Amino acid sequence: MRTEATGRRERPWTLLIYAALLLVSLPFVLPSLWMLASSLKTSAAIFGNPFSLAAADWRPLNFFQVFHDYPFARQYLNSLLILLVSVPATLLLSALAGYGFARLRFPGRDAAFLMTLSAMMIPGELTAIPQFLMFKTVTLTNTHVPVIVLQVFSATGALAVFLMRQHFITLPRELDEAGRVDGLGYWGVFWFIMLPLSRPALATVAIFALLNSWNDYFNPLIYLNDERLMTLPLALQRFTDPLGGVYWNLTLAAGVLVALPVLLAFLLAQRQFIESLAASGTKG
Figure 1 (spheres, rainbow, N blue to C red):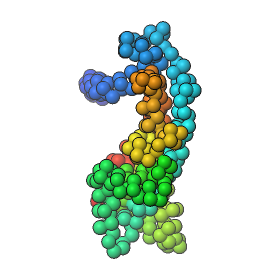
Figure 2: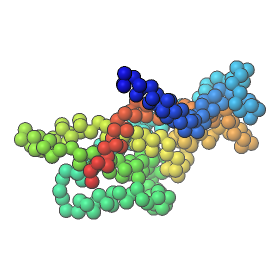
Figure 3: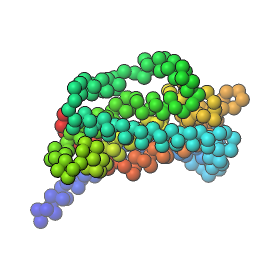
Figure 4: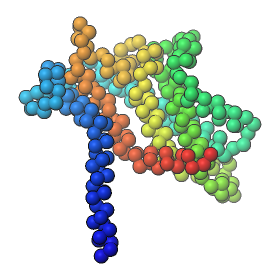
């Protein structure tokens, strides 16, 4: 009886909490829903009645026109290829660096770690000019190479190293000793023991690296001039008429196509993402 009475008393508070959470989520959810609805309309319908859902205003052909009239498919493929190179590279390098900073002892380790963290504190705009001159000297401008390199060795890369180091610190030292008893060296311990136990942290790093690669606007803007080499953030500003006006229905349709992969990636890995963030600060 007490349990039932307690449950009845707690239920109104539970409903109130759910209502408050729903209210707080509206500013984040409504713009996305409006973007999805507007991507199916004509430009006139978007500005005539922005919140109308009348079937007469719908124009699903916006998604077809994005691919038919513009090199959007090629630009989509460019972003996917860059992502498929930069994300695994970030995962591998951050895991190796994090393992070294957490488990190995070598001269200058702490100083090197502080220098790595300093990459998160220096704005990318400050180093843009010397980086551009460096890549121009080796004739790599207007290619995807500088975009990939600068995504891997960026503030996101430094954050990835920090997260992996914090994760490896939380793993017990007995795992290393057990691996050495079985005849494993540092590489064997890392590859066969530490890495399989690091899936939540790797999922978090993968999400950060994916977001960094998929949303990168600054570096492609500097290094890519050919429209067929451009990535999606640059492609979103190309839906214009001959007079410079914006086709908002096409821009919003392309925006939906750009947002979907990131949303799906987070939904699939949100549990690992939250678990790793919760554990990343438990030890220093």
